[in-house]
Length: 621
Image (tube, rainbow, N blue to C red):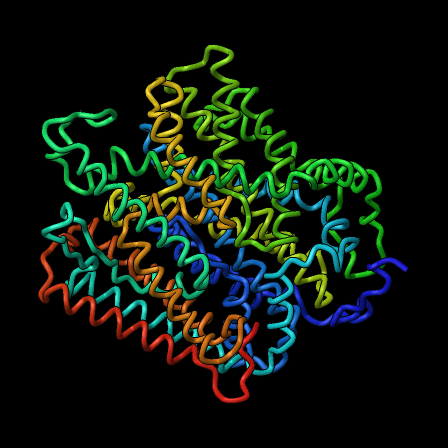
């Protein structure tokens, strides 16, 4: 008996409760924009995004149940499917589209919309033929952790209204906190102190609610690994550079003496290149971990495509979009990428998008099924896409800026495709477990992609004008890294010695059983960012230590997700007023840095109190 025959979904195929309803679509669109904007802000700040599926499920259950009495589990599932598309699209877009800005191309609303929607649709179309194998036939083998957890939350939806209030509380607290920083300037967002004895080593903390929430969500292990990278870069390597670079020594790629450099200049000239080497090696290791499954994927994809009989399936839970429509949609999307003048892609670039996009969609769809979205090797795949494209272009003698931008555009489309595809696979697994109609979810993913694409351009433009890409406030780590690699490779001035040092640090981390990618991201990010994330991870650790459980506390996750979203959305509002000239975000704070530290620690304690499980309360999702 096959897995498909043995498995019984929560809602049987014979039942047909309300699913693709107007109220579910409207709420899903609102939450898609909500989580898309929020993740764009936090992703540009720290290079990480947070999953929207579980918070969106809980919020949906709470809101719909408060307004209606006849809400079905399938409606709530459709809401989270549409909403999660916003988070996934934001991840792909903010990791790559600012790269075009760093390479000299202006960010426009229309270009961002076109890149987002075509990349997103391509990811959906490429993933759908794999659903039958990855989601259905490999049930019990590919576990899809986030998708399974989301299904359990939906099944336990009787208490959804109460839990939704925790997410709303988090949004409110995060928004008020950002208002006090951005509008009132009550205290400085970043508090820092510099030692007077040990080479003026800097101690700093970004007192942002979103970073606290991110730290809680990713947990103590990853948060600790990231701060380890930060400590290595800022408290070990940087002081050593100062010690051995005393006097008037000028060491490339810097053009001024080390002795006269500030901490930020040392980071820009040396540390970020070391971090880039670590990120590159970490991404390659992430790919090698799943290499044994790549060859199997090609066989599976070919077999799945040849055996598709989904158009005529009588069972509601097996109804996908028609395969002919998926094939036609893929071709139309690729043709649109080729013919759209503002993208400036030649035929070779589109062929690369088709080949690399399909292969990497398959890789990521399987990877998230095995280890979850948090281990999705997206960073490594994006780097490899850029390097492969640039090397092919250079082999043809295409070395000028236009082709560098073209390679970055290829990476952007592929990045958005794999992020949307990995989220689609998780959502389809959730739907499979509860008995949703795949076709409804697939259309829902498209709706969510359109909604998030419509606001992504405005969001990026506002954030850049107010906070500036590449600044400590909005470091855009992946995009900065991609632009450095592209410029250095094409111009032949990439500081390979520093990149090699970073790669060796990453290798050492891997040999010690630590994922190099997390260490390298911590090495690459500003110290104040990793410090704030670490405090959030510490709150998560002590909460679980006291409760005696190793799983996430659902209450803490919901409140932390709300903090991220509330802080980010208010940050967009502040950016709008800053661009309009109403608010001066560079105004001096009214209170000293100690007040910012106290407020941040008080918020951390409050989050721990919220997350702390009550007696006999289950803590695991």
